[in-house]
Amino acid sequence: MPKKSNNKPVKRDEPMTGAMKFFLAGCVAELYLLIVRRFYANGTAVQQIAWFDHYLFYLMGAGAVLLVIGAVCAALWRADKKKLVPALSVAAAGAFLALSAVLIRWNMATLTLFTVVVPVVMLLGILWSLYDRECALALTILGITLVILWICRRAGSSQYYGIYVKAVAVIYLVAAAAVALLTKQGKLRKLLPANADTLPVYIACGLSVAAIAAGLVSATIAYYVMWILAIVVFALAVYYTVKQL
Image (cartoon, rainbow, N blue to C red; front, side, top):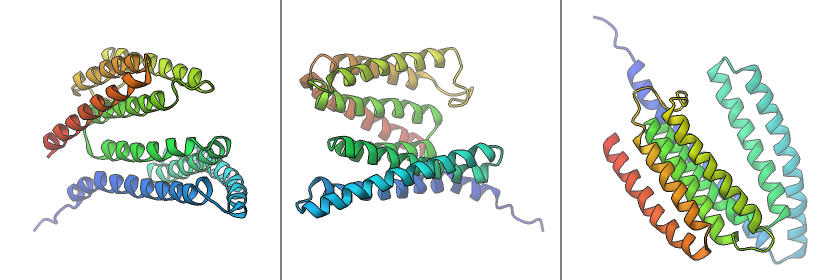
């Protein structure tokens, strides 16, 4: 009797394994941020806050070292996928530690931003592991749009950061339009296969441009647009989940 091949179950398990890795990494990163919030941002003892301030300083260096090691190893092992993925994971962990430590020490308000961004990135990683490429790309665009709308609502009218927030929003408007154009020209083959349905990507780019443009008008409009877009994202996620099943 011919031996049964184990290739199919392994291939089916690969997306779920990738999704679980993103889930665990997101949980660890969020737990780290919650600890920093509890003992540094909301700390009451002066010695405790001072200790965490030094701790974050050392994390900058550790994160930078991990980033360099991961990037160098990724460049050396770019032809070997089994080694490339762990190297990129180390680089990503180092970038997260270094960037979060720098921004949190610079401005405590960025801690709230990180606690929002980490779950979003985790969910998008799960989407890219489990869903079709066009679905994952469309939901990624809409997810980033939600984060930018949230930032516009919180800091868009700030005297100090408002101009930077609006500049980032305008850059994202251009980027969303560029993604739609590149998709139409077929230049995103590494992200979208030739037989992919590009309509969800066009819809996501169009909604993002309209939402960001409306959100730039005022914080109140950004608030309501954010909720409307969140409902759209949830409906699309449910639709694609049912379709995938």
